[in-house]
Image (cartoon, rainbow, N blue to C red; front, side, top):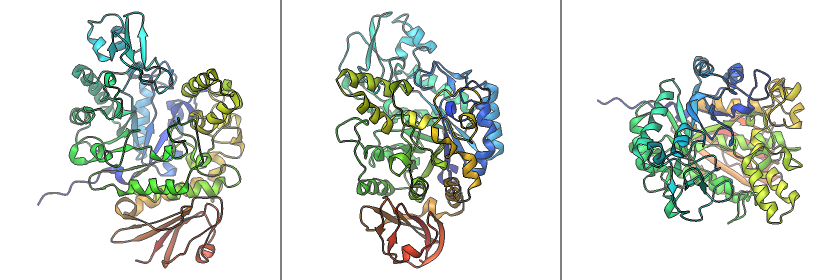
Length: 539
């Protein structure tokens, strides 16, 4: 009799994403660091999370906040030392928390030794680590505005950069380059990390001369080779950032039989407040029916041959309570609703720092207050085309990446307890009201809602393996069942700030979690604004 394969740890895990620069400063330089994270591990253990996804802490010039790496096997001095990193892995491990590193191998910094050598001589081995052209091949655009091709005076050729010109793209068609990448991955695996989050991984198969960036023909060959030469059959989390993921191609990444990744991040919901055919800056109100449809669609995956990630926030996206909720008078109730709505679904949930206390977007009034390279370049480009500064700033306030990157709000002291120096990015002025200390002291806070959701996922298999059935309701309400052999759960959420109708047909066995005081209104067929119920019902 063959032994049943052990279920991967990440199937019932909850991952907490840390943006190190903004989490906790330990030395007063205004920049979050590794010792700062170590000092907050008890807080994270208390929340109940299983792993930390750590945004890049490698050596970097910092043009794109660490996503431009100049040395993959060194810690940037502003974050600490390799000894600090090893201590973080060990101390987190003592608390049952794994460390998931951010793997950025679509591109490097232009200050990486490989690129420095590549620019010196067309015959150097390193030259072929990057994508070069003697003539500008096409009008491919950079994600950060302008052309994706930059002429290099030193060598007299164009190089490809899908992102900033300081982030030249690696040439994955070169087997020697691929082996270099696998070597650096194994360096970190040997340090004892528990996984990789793979930055824009669907771009590595690009064929830029044909205008193909995402989902290139060789992409999955490279991922299979990576699996074989690095994490292989370890109990290891790999999640790919795949902006082009669809219901059809997501299983290509995450089917265990294909031996590629554990799961992907898909971003379909992020398109819902974007005007069709426009850029992310051109927003429109979210249609509740569309939101419900997208969330339900991704529950249709064959979970025996695929897996799903669940998230609202990350370091690139605006704060969810500001985006899909109400960050003013209904902040607490709408943040809890969004948490219950997402965490009731099947997949692996990710919480972004500050989400668990309902941190909000942080509006700016002038471009000088904006740090993010993407927003600043868009501002310059649109201003040059004649758009009004106030209109561009309105777009930045809605969609800018700095919204997610303002320092973590720990308490009411100087700069929200993030630093005793001057924070690298201004702290959201609402920290006096919204902070960890206040959340821990309030048994009815958003924090305890998240803590309860994590505990429920750990204790009830129905969240990991239960079926999903969407109920037929009006667009403004999302209601669904999760059911396995043992239990049947009903999740009901009012997606709006207005009262809605819902007929409860099930017999409630137990209220597992809610943002309402009782079931009275629900039994009367009413859903208060942003009401959410997670109920165990009779089978």
